[in-house]
Image 1 (spheres, rainbow, N blue to C red):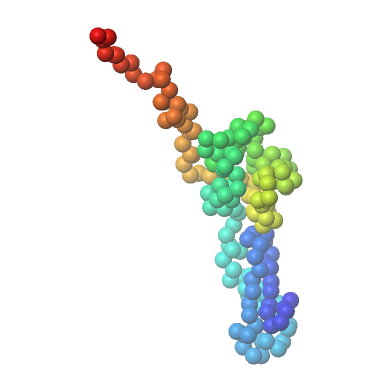
Image 2 (tube, rainbow, N blue to C red):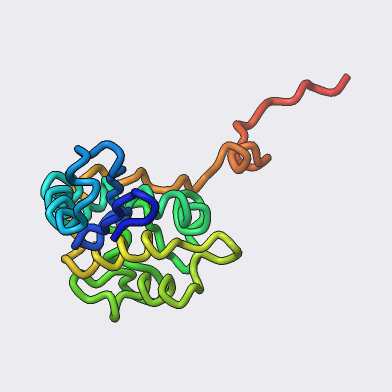
Length: 178
C-alpha cells in the first residue's frame, strides 16, 4: 500500500503500466493516519486517471512511434530486410518473406510478436521494455486498430548516384579532330 508516507497504486488495466502516486503529505491530516481510507483514495485515483479512459492502443498514436524508434532502420525506408516494411499497418498485414507480420486478434500467430517476445528482435542490446511489449501485444490482441494515416511513399528504386552512370547520360557530340 504505502511506503514512507507515499501511497502507490497500479491501474487495473495494462496500459500505460505506470503507478499512480499520491503523496500522503498532501492529504488532510485525518486521512494520513487512517490506512482504511487508502483503498478509497486508490479507487478515486483510478477513476480520475485519464489513461483509464484511453481505450485500445492505436497504430498511429501508440504503435507506430514504437516501431519507428526500434525497427525502421532495418525494416523501412530503403532497407527492408526480409521484405518487411513496418512503416504502415498495410505493410505489417502484408508482411514479408515469412508471411503476414501481424494477424489481428492473434499475437501467438503474429510473426512480429513471436520475434519480439523471444527477444530476437530488435537485434543487439536495444530490446523493448516489458511495457512496450505489453502495449504491442495488447494492440494485436484487440484487433490491430488504427493505421488509417497515409501510407509512406514507395522506396526510391533509382537513386541520384545511379543516374550519374555513364550510359544514362545524354549523348554529346565530341569536337571534330583537327
